[in-house]
Length: 406
Image 1 (cartoon, one colour):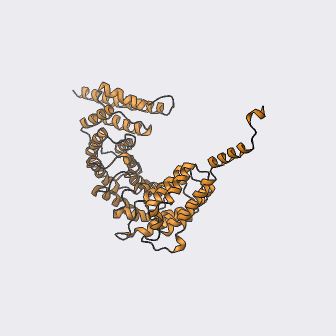
Image 2 (cartoon, helix red, strand yellow):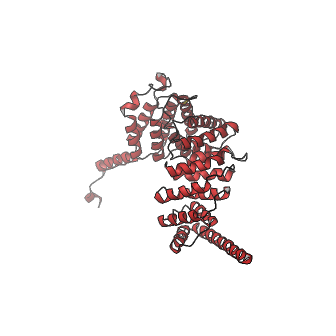
Image 3 (tube, helix red, strand yellow):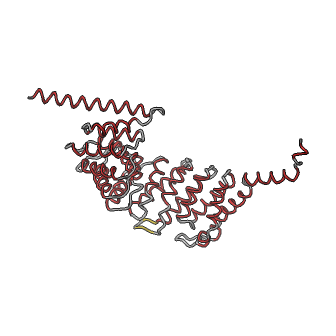
């Protein structure tokens, strides 16, 4: 009897090892452009055969789908969910939790994904050990999930691991938690998670690199009305200032993420945080970071759209408008982008609301938007399409008729 049990256990281990090897081979294939989507094909094949998968195989499959950015079919997701549900074993291993969560970022958000999220929450619930860097950074895998009961359950199950995170976790790692919450609406659970990140940032202050600073700004965009979100914004603003003082510059994409993150912070005061002053300082620092850089037209339009939604009458916003005006003057933008910029600057509420916000500004600080309007208008007259039309008109005047050129 004992020998039979050992043989059965060895067979299960052998099957698990063979599944893991197969997944790794398929993942290597997925790196080849001619290989199609082997991870998705493998999951679909297993879903059709209804082969019973082990926990390790399931998390490896989810991790592989995340690494190869393969969105699994609805049938595959249902099969994986039921296979995981049949397993009595809890996911009380940081390695397993990290692989399962990391694989969610490529799955979108639908009924099947919500079912998997609910099962994962039940399997992770009760895990109260502190996460290391691997577990913390995997929480960025929640970035495609939206607010719902299942997502709240999963986020709540992950909170103890963040609260008790070990000392090897850096603030750059913690930025993954904020980034993973970018589509979640404020709730009791999400506020608790942000509070744990805020506590970590206060207790273990350390420099962050630019990529993680900007990712954190972007992740906060839906949490503008929460006190932990406002306090984290204040700390990130100081980090942005430090980066500038060290002579480093954000690139245009990073700056656009910061702008999109702060556009919802339009209030005056939240708790002990002066929001208007914090946003003003952030916008002024962005003006410094973007000075002299070239920004593609579509990205520039997105930046100005975000700036219009934020505190547009502050001194910092005015500096940023002037920086954008200088970029427009020195960049070769398409006509459609120039038209959009000029139209935005002519909207009445933009000009009439200057100077009416919480930050007091004088008349000399109200000319940024006018400078942008002037730059866009002048470039519209000099756009290549206009120059080409002008040259054609001149050619028609002086070019001899076709019969004379033969």
